[in-house]
Length: 339
Length: 288
Image (tube, rainbow over all chains, first blue to last red; front, top):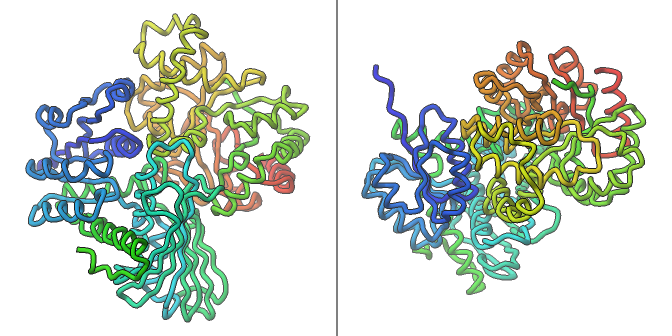
């Protein structure tokens, strides 16, 4: 059997996520990072020192014309996603878009429509499904470890760096990642109510959400990006069920059971990140990135659907749009109102 | 190659880095923002005979070192760049992006104040741009350590691993040449990917001490605990173990027996309180 051709990758946008994906592609034996494009020529000149064998372009059209590529990672600002996808999709490319899917629900919807009936792989960069503690939490929840679960409380706290140049992107990025985690764990919401000191895209903001999931689960979420003491985003979800409670964070799971169940004793059980085997072969910045990146590349080789699809990304944008609408109108918004 | 002390005090907690919970991280950030909470731990460690300290140029740590009466007797292993600080400063461009922005900022300063005289020997054999860029960055990072007895310079794990993934051996060559020629000390590489880094360094015939995770739980031992253990057993590279308590999940009594017969030259131990310092470091002294 002939060896499978390597996936030929181009990166558009060479900021934090662009560098991350380039690095992860570079160590993946099934893929080959061939080129990068970013309008900041000064940064490119510096980066070229580190990657002398990669083709650098400040113009994407030139990159697409000169380099033979079949897969693109879009890591440029959210507002560029739709125009880029509109162009790339005609070139029969597999496309990975960093989260959120686009800058708005309308743009996201157009992207999903453009991808309809295409055989390529389209994925959005959400990494929660690749973190071992979240995977374990999902298994416990779906196996009914807490018996009947009626509600959860969730929080995302983060100290937004004062020197940041791009508040909007950070807020959208963090908020959408967290909403994706809730969506992935508990399924879609059918309605939500949101209240905020500002809007999603303003600087001084905290948002409270009440989420009514299609499954009947009710959630209360508190998102804040100006709380001191959280240099890394701190996500926490507390589930309450008739059989006990489960606290989920990126560092540990704390399970409390009223009686022995599912192989776990009555009382407290703490599962730390170090207690679970990590499937990751390479660690860069944070757990989940390598797995998310390599899972997409593997899917490109085998034409399998990605873990976080553009349809999922669209649902997250629907939640953000609904929250915005709810903040504006001060009422509960049905998700199917957002069309 | 220079050997280091068997036990080295780490500084993660002083920099607000913890792995058990975000509550713990928050406590570290608050508690160690006061240098008077760092100094007693430095004293306790020093009194227990631990005279090596691994740290970045974090302002709280530097401030504590200024007031610690035995700081001139400490052997400092300087971690560069101060990646956590960079990460906090710039989430948009990332650590490397922030470093590069800093490089641009300090370029003029370098032209006025710094030269490359000490590096003439190696300048001809490596890319000038890379040499200039890394020299700028390293001088900037190392300036804060000037008053202390620096015996090793550790390239931060995030940067090592980014360089590793670039597959560009020149970065490693330049790094070690600058540290050896300019600072006259031992270059060290920190990594989270020991099982990928060591074979690559062997292939490139680059020999530097490696600071990597080794613990009973296999926490951040990549690509796997077994592969890291097999490489460790056979290597003649000098290995410094970190995350020996698996990010705080193990106590010293559980953690140390696994490490005591391994081919490890030094152990980095971080502590988050005075009582933890006495407990962990005393057991370490008697075990290693």
